[in-house]
Structure formats: C-alpha cells, structure tokens
Length: 337
Length: 296
Image (tube, rainbow over all chains, first blue to last red; front, side, top):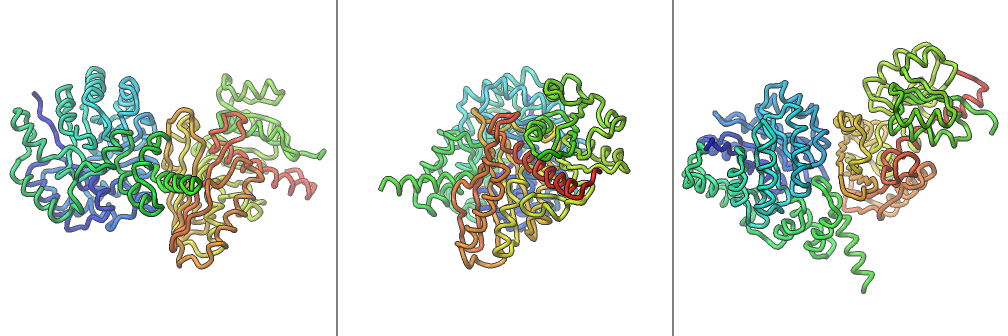
C-alpha cells in the first residue's frame, strides 16, 4: 500500500476552538514538535483561512501571515500550508503567505462552487506551491456532483483534491461512495478531511484510505472545530498497527498531545451536544462556538439554532446567520409568552 | 416626458439584459442599442424581438454608428471595460461601468450621486457594495466608523461566469469603496455563494466598529431606516431583516434584497440592485443633459 501523507490542521482548524487567539509562541512550539515528529504538512492560518480575521468570524490575535512566518522558521523538512477560501481570502494574501514561507495551499470552496477557485489554483501552481483543492461540505452533494467539481479542480492544475466533511456528518458509506468514485475518475491524489462530530473521524479516515485516499488531515487532541478532526496521534498509532506507512513518529506526537491538552485546549474536546447536533443536522463545524455565544446572549437553546441553520441549508462562512436565527427564535419565544 | 436620452448597453449577458428591461421603462432613457459579441445570446434575441438595434461585433460595431447612443452602460468585464474606455475616448460619450474595473469614480446613488454627475466614466462598485455601502454611510453620519465589514450571500444561480472567474475583484473593489464611499476608516468584504434550492434571496450583513461606544442608539436606528427608505425608492425589494443590533461600539445590520424578477427570478437581488442603481445614475445624467439642453 502507498504511503499516506498527513496534514496536521490543529494550527488552522484549531484556531476556531481558541477563538483565533493563537500566539506566536504556541505556533512556534507546536510547529517545531510536529516537524520533529516528521509530519509532512502543517497548516497555519485563521480558522476561516487567509483574510478570515473579521467581525464575522472573529479577529485573530496575531495576523496569520506573521504566524505563517513564525512556523516557517522552525518547520524544517515539513511544509507550512495555508487555507484560502475565495470570497474571503484573495490572491494578494496568498502571495503574502508564500513570501512568508508557505509552501502548500488548500483552496477551499463549497462543494458545488469549485469554479471560483480557478484563478487561485493557477496562481498557486505558478508560484510553485503544492496546490490542493478542498471541497467543503462534501456530505451535502451526491457523489457524482463531488466528482464533477473535483474534475474542475484537477483541470485547473490542483495536485490533489480533498473530500472535506466540514459538518462531520458523513457516514462510512458516504465516504466510501465519494472516495471510490473520485479514485476511479481522477488522475491526481485524493484526500479526506473529517470532523469527529459523530465519533466517526478515525473510522471514516480508514475507509477513505481503503478506497484510495492518500492524504489525510488530522488534528492533535482533536484541536479543530466542532468535536475536532481525526485525532492525529490516534490515527498515527492505528495506521502503524495496520502497517500503513505515514513516516510520522508516534512518541513525539504523544508528547506534543500532552502540551496541547494542558496548555492550549480551553476545555477537553468532547463530543458535546452541540457538536453531535451539527453532525446530525449537517451544519458547518465552526458554527459551534458562535452558536453557543449567540445562545447565551439572547437566551435560547444552541441546539435550536443549529437545527434551524441545518434546515436553512446554510453553507460554510455564513456565520452572520447565527445571530439572526438566534434573534428570530428569541422573538418567537417572546411572541408565545 | 417627451425628451429622452439615447442609451446603449455593452454586454448581452444577465446584467445587460436585465438593464435593458429596466431602461425600457425609464421616462428619461431611450433603449437604443444592445451591443454584444455572441449573436446567439438570449439578450440579443430579446433586444431584436423588441425592435431595438443590436450590434454583434462588440464595441467596434458601435464605433461605426456612434450616433446610436449618448450614454453607454458597460456590463462586460473589468478587462473589456478598460479597452472600451480607450476606444470611446474623444467621442464624448458618458460611460456607466457595472464591472468591477474601478476606472471611474465609485458611485452609490444614495450617497454621492451628484458628486460625479459630470464625469465621463462612473463605476457602480459591486452588487454587495450597492447593498451595503449606503448603510455604512448612514451609520457614519451619526458616529465615525473605524472599521466597516460587509458579508454578501448570494444564490449560486445568480452568480454569472464573470463574477466566478474574478471573485477577488468583488472583495477588493467592495472593500475599497467601503472606505472611499462609505466613509469607514478601513473596510473588508466577504462574498459567499449558497447553492440551496429553491435559491435564497440575496442577503447582506453590515458589521461596523465605531470609534467610540454608541451614544444614541435611536439616532443610529433612525439613520439606517431613512437610508433603507431611500434605497427602496429604486430597489423596492431592499429591506431590513430586523432593527440594527447595537452592542457597545459594534453595530450589526441585516438586510435582504429581493429583485423585481425582470430577467432573472426575484432571488437575484444582487443583479437587480446593480442594474437599478445603474439606471438611477443614468437617469440623473440624462436629466442633467436635458436641463442643459445638451446632447453629448
């Protein structure tokens, strides 16, 4: 079996968990340790990608270009990656990230909107970056649609395309259907990015590998939005037991996990009611913290907000809907009294 | 109104065709010529069915019969617009640019319409800019806006290939205009495409950080409401989803833009607010030309 390439996303997806307050020291230390453990790709960006620092998603404590620069100093043989969501981030910011030392970019679009990524993928390729297409909310489109959009990204020049389960809503059969169809029809590598909202992240990652995915995302200690991602250190251990090579050393990852648990995580990454409901209702994982804040502010149940957002088919990035939906639920409640 | 100014539209796609339908109702503008490059386009077919001149070889075709229009709307792309500006130089035509080229000064009708009425080229910013910048300005009329951010969410079906191929132009042009027209010290814009079925109506959220805490909440709410009334005069489906939410120095305004359903269905408020704002600017230019008794 071919080698599986891991991308550690705690310093990007985990940005949601810490409300985008990562410090330079944290980024430097985590990157240094990941590099020592031979993790090939380390993603460092605001949770919503380059340019994500905003009122809509939360301001970064430290500008993400500075964090990329800090990570690049100590990344060694590992490559620093950035996330870019066209519509939020721009090519000009991608160039800044490249100048700061980013060597990989994941250009992310909603699963049906791949054609907005053309310019960004082409530019990244021209700059010599490892260039990945990232199809968010892949659970929400049938496999044939995911394939159609993945083919677009391949045609723009992406080195690989990810099936991204942003809502942590996919069942193992959903992963199997999508990855196997892509594997049959694409020439480039296929990746899978999970969220553990239904406690399926490791299992789904294994199914993806079985069907031919060779790039998998993980977050150490599940430091990612919602219930976090595939827990990297667990995946490393499991793949080692299965005889699937990742090149990543387990013990340094376990040491780093202790640091993350004690010094970064504001609370243990459980599958809380909120994250479970997101997986169940198919809601973008980074909405969790915003929904909890809004629920407290207007005095409604966060579950009601999340379920309503699911019904409205809200896509990634529409955080402004959270306060609006919360306010509407509160108004209806008042109306009933 | 007996006297009208002749206008032409360059571009026979979604925006050009919707514009044509609105101009045909205008008391000040005469829909004279639609200029396209694809003879089979739906827009050109509609134009010739309606008895309007059509040109199928682009701007060069118009240069052969420039008497057909005194005001031209450009509904092509930023790159094409720059070529059009060069080719039309010296012909004394007025150009209203609906692309994000940002060659001419930015205009939002309720904010700075008359300021640029004499300029040879004006730019209509972006759909998200037309929907939100008046609100940034309305808040800024009460207290200084330190930072203005807007989030425009549009139905996937309403985003044409031009928008999709150049999405950075949307975010960058809108952000610039939040500063230069909206009056915020710094601006940011985000656009999101949502493929939900049935398609959702365009939504816009304006988030502002003021230099100081809000002193008079009612003054801000009143100013925003008045601005919404003004925009409604040319975009009837423009409305507040709820009253502004004010929290310390932060003001959040939720808007919805329902279109008239001229060319694309009503969900495409993004298309409508651009074309309606463009027509509004065209009418003001026409009025000023008529008043001066001048034909350009």
